[in-house]
Image (cartoon, rainbow, N blue to C red; front, side):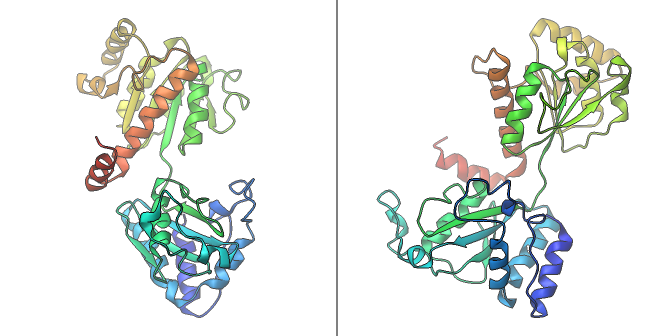
Amino acid sequence: MVKETLEEIVADLKAGRTPTLSPDDFSCFSAEALEGNEHVSPAYLEVIAASLSVADVPTFERALRALAEGDLAWLGFKIVYDPAEAIRNTDNEVTKKYGDTGSADGQPLVFFCNDTKEIVSSREPSPRDTFQMKDITRGPSMHNEQFEGLTWLSVPLFDQVHVWLLGASDAASEVAALAHHVGFAVTVVDYDTAYVSEARFPNAERIVLPGGNFDALDQLECKPEDYVCVLTRGHMFDPEGCVWATRHHAHYVGLMGCKGKNDRVRELVLASGATEEDWERVKRPIGLKFGAKTPAELAIAIVAELVDVRYRQRYSESARAKHEQSLGR
């Protein structure tokens, strides 16, 4: 989400103008994101824009503050395709605890919600709408198709976590696909164009190093908030990958391999100037432990760990405690 876009919307609403909303700014309304959705098209943004007024200014101003503070927050959109049904439709047999009142009204709505379940909107939502509005913190509205007459979309007010895959191995190809699917931005690095191909990594940024080795890896910059998975083919350049990731203080560094191989990698990492503390920051072996063996199974273990690290990194201690309690853990 771009700060200037929200500022322009606020300025338009304060001046009594109808803002222009574009799928380029609100990606949940893109044709790609809505593919197969029979109830919403990118053109619905025009309906949303026409529904906005000066009463919606606090919603967008709260979103601006979330951007400035790095808050884990979303802008949500209530999409109404059958107003009468949306109002009439009450909770099903499982979720009756939310009452016997359907949607508060048959009108679209833009709202703000963050990981602490703070909601800001121009109108008071019904208890059932509140239940669905809070669900955007689980992704693009987990229960968005639960009730007839309306659906829900959301766009995050924070950046994707960047995952570096050092090595274009078969496991890395599987990791790239899964990591992209669960919302990571993925970059794969290798020196062989035959492996760093669009066919193997269709949804990742691909970087080909010159020279037939990983010497040029030092020319790339990794941010402290990035994650690094060292998955080089044949483990030939694992030491270079670990040194690079720890030198850039990556938030997470994981290394694949057995203990014997990793003992040798440790020797080479320390010989390259890294410290024992640097080495201890490397998660090894990478991934959660549940008997994974094949590249696809290993990818599930690795991406599951990445999701867990991201969860712990993003959510506040109080939000995590509440979630853990709900899981009975």
